[in-house]
Length: 234
Image (cartoon, rainbow, N blue to C red):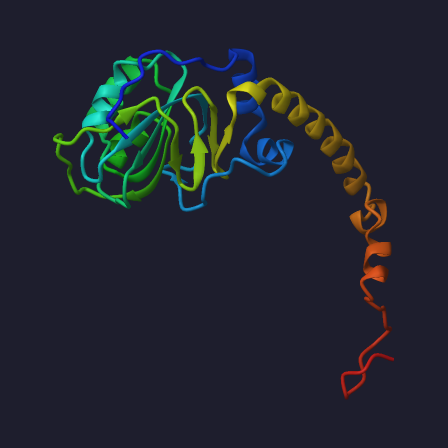
């Protein structure tokens, strides 16, 4: 693909982004049919990291962060940078100085399928980052790439403007066009889970109210009162 920078993208509705961020990764993932989850090797650099925003996508050559610099010009308040490389990389492609610049442009988080550096500084800034690796290995600025084109990051397809939700459970992508619907489904799921939580607190078993006893019977699972010395049920 010819190196390309797309200046203008459509972003998701702000209310939908906020709602998805409040729901969190696990609920959003379930609400949209268990899709959109990035691979679990992407971890937050500090446990309390949370972010939700529209994706500005960046495709870089490994060990070269030139296109991250180019992407920052196009960022708006509430965006999340999503960075991938054309082949596997663990180099520290993003650090404290880029975070200062990103924050000044309104960026609320970074998802990068490569390495980051200056982690103590990023944590002190409370700048949310999900990365493959932490590495002091520096980078060059010499090779072209692309900004705001569809990318695959940590096994997930991300289009510019898709909603990125990140927390301690990882990162999930919600297609821009379905953000409002997923937010609604997620809210319904939370309400249902609250009712389930109350039943569990009262001592009811999920085995009963989910109908799992019948499932066990269908699967041929038997109950016995004890196991004799030969291992047979009696």
